[in-house]
Every structure is written in C-alpha cells, then in structure tokens.
Image 1: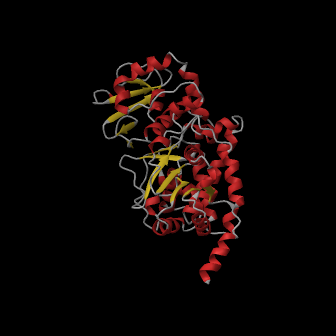
Image 2: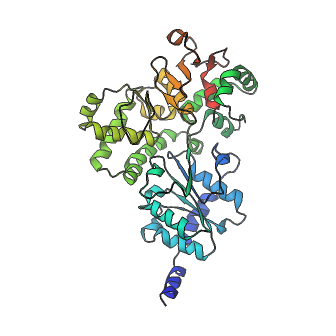
Length: 410
C-alpha cells in the first residue's frame, strides 16, 4: 500500500523544468574544442567528481560528454543543484524518478550548493548499483575531507584554467600537443622554431595574459573584465559560505583581504600588520587566505609543502592567474605578471616551492628565475639545474627559455 503511494507520488513529480534548462544549455555546446582534462578522465567510473574554479569550463565539459555518448540526450539528465527546482524537491526525488525511468547516468553541477551532498552520493552509490554520476563542484571543496568518506567510491579530478597552448587551439591558430617539462627544458629551441613558423607568438601571448585563462572571454570580450570581477564576487559571497560556515562579517573581510593583496602583489606578507588591517586574528586570517587559494583566486607560495589541514604563513602571495591581475590590480606590474603566469602554468602538474635563491623551485629539482630579456644568471649562477624563464623573446638558448613556452605544458 505505502509502496504504491510512493510510486504514484514519484510519477507526479514535474521534471520538465530541469529538462528545459538542460536542453537550453546543451543547444549552445560546441564539440570542436575540448579542455585538456577531457581525455584524461576515466568516464567509466561509478562516481566522478570534477572540481575547479568558476568559469574554467566544467559545465561545458559535462555537456560535451553527453553529446559524445548519447544519441538520444534524454536518455540521461544534466541538472545544476542550485536550480530553483531543488527548493521544493530533494536530490533523492530526482534520483528515484531517474531510476524508475531507466536513466542510469546523471550529470550534476554545483554539488557544493546542496547540503549533505556527500551523504546523498554515498547512498546513491550503495543503494543504486546500476546508476553512475558525474558531478562538479567548486575548487573550494576538499572532497576527501567531506564528512562522509567517498574516497573509495569516487574518482576525482581538478580542472584548471586554460593554458597558453589551449588558448592557441581555442582561437583556431595552432594545435600542438602538450610537452613534458623535462622535454621542454631539453628541446625548447626545436619546439620554438617549429611554432614560430606558424605564427607571431608575442602578440598572442600578451592577449592570453589579459583574457585567455577563462574560456568565456569569447562570449563578449569587452565585458570580460566585468564578468570576471562578478565571478570573484560570487566565489566569495556564495561558494565560500556553501563550503565553510562563515559569517557575513567574515565574507566582507575576505573581500577586503583580496583587495589589499591585489594592490601589493607579489605580496611578502607581514602577518601581524595584515591581520591588524583586517581586525582579525591569525587563525581566521590564515583560513581566509587558504580559502582564496583553494578557490584559485590567490596562489600561496611556500618554502615547504602546502597542507590545508595545518595552516601556516605563506612566503609569497600571488593572484591565481594573470587575467585576475588585469581586473583586480590598480596597475599591472610586468615582473609580477610574468611570475604569476609561470606559477599558474607550472602548478597544474608540478610541486612549486619558494626557494632560498631564485624565484621558483620545481619538484625539488629545477630552479627558475623569471624576468625580461635582459635577465642574467647572476642570482642563480653555479646552481645545478637552474634556468631562466625569459619574457619578450621568441627563441631561447641552452638554459635560457622563453617564458611563453611554459604555457605548453598542459
């Protein structure tokens, strides 16, 4: 009797608004360009989690996968968990409806906006063994630290913003495979000569530094700065409270912290002075800094391995990428822009540390100094495996490598 009533109730759920939104979104999707992570994902896993900063293309990647794998797109369903539909329905309503209608693959966006999302995913995995889910979340979320242990049940990935290599492909200018760091260090002259035959590098590199990290710049390049600032606000005002229990007052302090740092990057912090400006203490101040780092709005550079469980003072603070510099900094310092670009490209696949000498230590092995074309080895001479990453030059020589080439790594 009760089971019968439940089934009837489920049949009366109005799912059409979700499908309408899904159809509107998927109608705009282009399959010609796919982000670097697309081919690296094991799409056969039962639960796949993809986290990343806002605006880097997570939703597009989900919808591309649907178009690639379903002749009839209504054999699956995409839904964003911040959709108004979920204000009167639960995620389990959707799961039960999908299961009854033989929809065994769901694509869920923005899971961090849904309370107890981890418990729901665990229950789906345990109680609906035929069903698989691909979901996205804010990069603020440390998935392995959710209250419910999903680590044995899911495969997780992080999507970063576009590399310079991807930007060139996205613009239809050049398709080139990504290059391993060791290969680049050894053969950069050969690669540079080959690429220069196809295009003039430096004007394109300048364009990338201004707007090439976020794919949505193509929608309206004139409004790109306004939209990027709006995204940063949404991260602080909406995503951060969804992941961390913080007050309105703390949200305002996070905004102020970001603007203080934006005016001074690269920032070598005097913590007591910084916390005094914010009227806060060391513990809360560090939590705010690390939250902005997880959101990929800031990038904290440490002399030791970064650990989100034990928070300690960073040695240097950068903005997360050069595009953010152009919309948040009152004036863009060229030297800082170079270092910000280098860090944003190297940190995707490598461990980057703050060294005693030089600018960046990569994988505890390679030491780099970043600068303009007049940069010399004076600061890092006689150190094994030391290199210059040099701007304003198209071709390098020996351990002197053009800065733009570090955008070919992913």
